[in-house]
Amino acid sequence: MDRRSLIRNAGIAGVLAAGMAPAVHAQATVRWRMASSFPKSLDTLYGGAELFSRAVKAMSGGKFEISVHAGGELMPAFGVVDGVQAGTVEMAQTAPYYFYGKNPAFALGCAVPFGLNARQMAAWMKHGNGRKLMNEFYAKYNIVSYAAGNTGTQMGGWFRKEIKGVADFKGLKMRLGGGLVGEVMQKLGAVPQSIPGGELYQALEKGTIDAAEWVGPYDDQKLGFNKVAPFYYYPGWWEGGPEIDYFINQKALDSLSPENKAIVEAAAELSASDMLAKYDALNPIALKQLVAAKTKVLPFSQQVLDASFKASMEVFAENDSKSPEWKKIYADMRNFQRDQVLWFRFAENRFDNFMATQKL
Image (cartoon, rainbow, N blue to C red; front, top):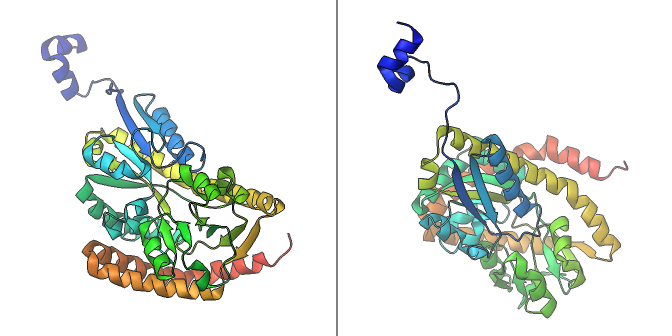
């Protein structure tokens, strides 16, 4: 039987069964919306979502498009978990610790005080139990997570007055990125505030708050904090390596073809690695400019760090009794961190500390 006869007698089903189908299959066009928790002005955080969107479109030949919407456009910046869970949007870009109030375990997918640095977080998520445990938890919210990026260790924030010791936190109204560090700061006497990034400058300028932490030199300079608060402290001990995530509605993800699922995973890897590299490239330049503009860059004292560590351990113990999900994931993270700290004590820390003292 020749080819034309085969087609006439068997139809398209016969062609497919005979392995004669065209090599390229037409795929239905997919259109998604992504709600970000970040303002458009931040080309690092919000820009990561735009990079992800461009990569998805390019890899799919324009057949899969994701529109990106800044915090407040489709829903409040802190409402994106509810939006993804309900299927109002297919996905979101956010910092999981924003949703600590729903369950303390959310913070473990992003950062906890004195937790993992950026490289250690990636190692735990990819080659430890991190992603597995977090996605088991997120399943209760109809969510699947992918890493969207990391900022690296953040700065400790902008203050209107100098912080010489723990007593200076008493009564201080400070914007903090998540409820977990807010509970720790309360033990130190501070009054934590939860304010989206796009509203921070005005709150600091008007004196609604006394201090604010955001990310690091590049983002902070863009938001202008140095104009209204002269003291810039480090390190942000509550954010050693905060992971930004993509949250995807489980049903929406399940509806994708295998090819589009692979595209989502590849685009996430691209934007995640780019974000940390971008911060590492841009932060030093911005820090020098801030210092030239008379910003007072100061370290938290040993007393402050010791007191903060003690208070953090108290909050973690309290969370163990409040949330079984927290207790399970936190124990795994700390066990992983012990070996990471041991390893970094040797080659990494010794090399970095030596290089910090050299003239280049």
